[in-house]
Image 1 (cartoon, helix red, strand yellow):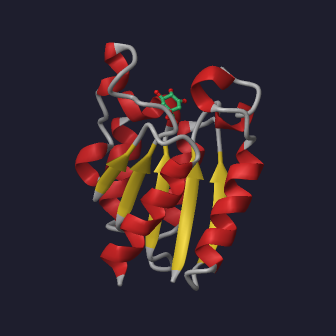
Image 2 (cartoon, protein in one colour; image 1 turned 60 degrees about the horizontal axis):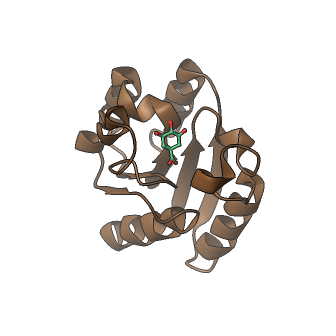
Length: 143
Ligand code: DQA
């Protein structure tokens, strides 16, 4: 099983960025733990982070035909990127949306996800654990 993990804008600053909301772990630390978790489930994982919408779309397109599932934290693109939404829909790869923070309990604009309708699940508010729970759900749908 091959899984692509995509992280969107500003997530490269995890550890330094609003630790009271996003925690103190860096993105590398969170992805390392996810990599170990996925390896334990016999999954090969690829990790991609970008602050650019087009680069995220290109990476999703490149997954077509060679990737079984996607885990994506689109960052703020969650709330308004119809282009990322359409890319996920276009490649038809089962995708889980994850967030570290509780997007439903913060500013009202964060409660809206334009990505959610094309995903099989949305996980939020569990901190770094959101990625692992997202992976569990994705794998349970793929097996
Ligand atoms: C986030 C939530 C988004 O609203 C925010 O713009 C982020 C991070 C999260 O993981 O909690 O960049 O996706």
